[in-house]
Figure 1 (cartoon, rainbow, N blue to C red):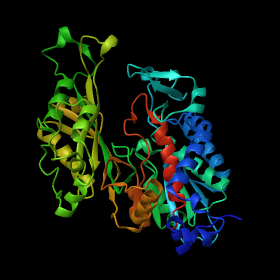
Figure 2: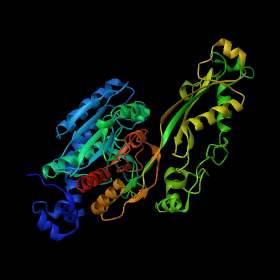
Figure 3: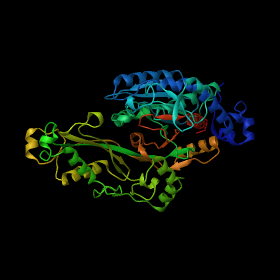
Figure 4: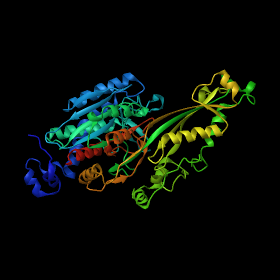
Length: 513
């Protein structure tokens, strides 16, 4: 018979020896911090093959064959664990919904998992392949050295698995599956129904998610949303994040000669598009990193209660700057937490001509910048994008959303192609919401300490469609190490965080709701 965690007696089970007697088969050792820690250690060890398997499946969302392979794997993994699965069709990659109902459950928790990962440049990874997980540990000089995978049988917390999506975000997927296995082997079920929505286009901005959520309101209906994604606070203590910034992207291209020209023949004559692009980008910010476009920060203000919430996060900014090796920081706000409450304007990449071993003496034909704008609730995304577009015009450019033809080129002194995508808006949830109180209680019981509570993370996750369309509150439960090289070469997952991630999810799954 499966142990059920219901009602008041289940809450008492976690804190009262009297309740241990009442519950009978559900001994307190099943749910206290010590027992959950031991269980997580066991199932971290036994689930390393699962982690290695999922990380070995390429998952670039730009490649349909990668998406298909991951959808099939996810269907199999959740079906084996008693879930029914259903593909939700979109214009591109499907979403995958896995559902498991528990007898007598009164509430439903929707869980968001990301399966896809950033593209990879294998030449910048210090291992055979980003999709061949490598186990590494630091040598005496502090450098990462690969060791045989068999060493994971006697792992220590500071060992790391290096692979694309080890932290963002297949690692949390493996943690969740391992926690389900642990409870199944102990004959324990949550006292709530579980729906798991899996996203295979998150790194593309989840362009099809909002419409899919709108079209499947009833299918996705739930009482709350929990997101297993992202890094813990820099202290690596248990963390809850109650919001995230949204994201929009801009592609800005400037033009020189119709094709690249010899710089000896046409330098000093043909305008250089790279220089023009650099000038317009530099005009967008001052020397202290603040956006100079009028109105960009309009609507952002903090009352005393909000400032207290931001101050309560135990950031050591000297440590942050040392880790990032920053001799100075932007002056958008007075602290790190306050800075990420503002919209940001970031150049995420630039290209013109060639460099390094392919460099050549030319006036380039074009120059391009890729820009991301991190969004907050107080700012209208379309308004921010329009402000940036208008600023480019004010620098003397004719702005179009097309590649200019000869007629357009000859008619205008300076031309910029400006295209954009508004992916999704920000979201924030109150600390004292039902989901907030429930998760806080779970982490307090699991780790015997208060979790760090963060008002809003600087990164972006496609959660606002769920919050706004389904009308449910959402909270992120981050588990991975912050220094994981997320989105970069040599992404990694600290094994101590992997074990503690399983422990976190065990605590949540055994917390009565």
